Image (cartoon, rainbow, N blue to C red; front, top):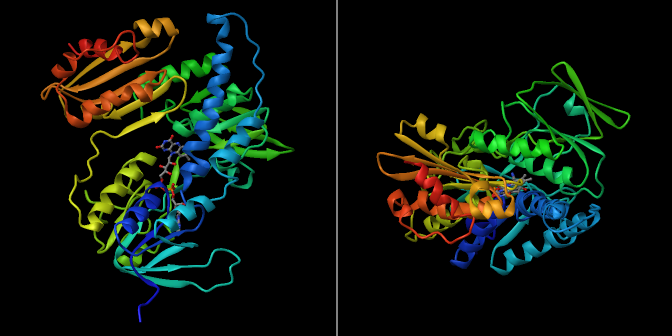
Length: 461
Ligand SMILES: Cc1cc2nc3c(=O)[nH]c(=O)nc-3n(C[C@H](O)[C@H](O)[C@H](O)COP(=O)(O)OP(=O)(O)OC[C@H]3O[C@@H](n4cnc5c(N)ncnc54)[C@H](O)[C@@H]3O)c2cc1C
């Protein structure tokens, strides 16, 4: 008799990649068990990309309304958070319920179990019952193997006093029904910067604290400066290069000691990076280091040093983006199904910070290219001086990084309206290693924002 707890593949963690991979494998004819201890779909639809972009869309509409006097008469803008919360609750997350996602998964042929899972040896997974179910842990074996897609949790820095306070993470921010009067944001990376600007545009008094010398530290310095300047103009206080000494919470107020000064606010949002969900996964039972920050994978997403194990998504350390998780899912699915196809390559990873101005970038920064020993040429252009930028009264910049020896772009950054959309042609350039001479010989539609790429190419010399 067939053992019902023996399947072809067990997928542990159903973030965007795991959900997609499990579906592809089931449609490919394999028996698949998908396990998640929380919500099918992971961080992105419930607490990440989608709710945050709904907030940002609403905040951008407010900002556009406030710009009417620059272009077209008078405006009075009265922000109201209720429609934003209602849209996130009803349209994005169905009140943080994954029933639709579970149904979609099961209709595709995946068997779903909810609960925390851990490896207990090669191709063996133990799933504990989800809270309150009263069941004992169940062991599943996977004939082909196990795929890990366990993602990340918000990291909480070891600041004196912080742990005992009712601070928020992105998960609280995405569920907000009412806005506070004032907010301190610890961490000026992509998540902190996006949420800081969105809340500020709704009238919250926001201060961003960043320990690195600049916000958006992984991006080009020009991007950090432009965004920080706009934040300043919009009334967001940005303190970079600071040391956060302590956090206290008393009578409904946070007090954050930063160097010599103490800042006060109604609420505190911690967006200081992410912690991979690897510690409690039983990695040691398959010969891997449970204290590692990521799972080492090859170009087919097979975990290095463990047989019958694949890993995808944030835990691979190749870029914590939904598009990375989905990209890797497709490659791992092909590998498991024995299908041919391109292997993973990370030379043209695009990323977008959805601030206004939006920061889209791909590949290497200038510094990364120089550190890699390339013969670097840089071309920049001010978006405001392009015809479209001038018409729109836009703020922005395009920066290209060329490997001059090969005559191809290895990196690009677009800061400005729809920066992430303009980026697409440069992502093609970096991905396909299109010669910069070929990019120069193209026709760029007039008057578009992307036409500024032509000027940046000319600036390469
Ligand atoms: C506020 C915010 C905004 C973001 N915006 C963007 C954006 O605009 N664009 C973008 O590309 N990315 C964005 N991201 C990042 C994006 O959400 C992640 O990169 C994406 O969710 C992919 O993660 P993942 O597939 O690795 O897993 P996750 O989405 O983290 O999912 C992992 C799943 O594994 C489950 N799990 C963990 N451990 C276990 C276990 N032991 N047993 C069973 N289940 C387990 C979890 O419950 C979870 O459902 C944002 C993130 C945040 C926080």
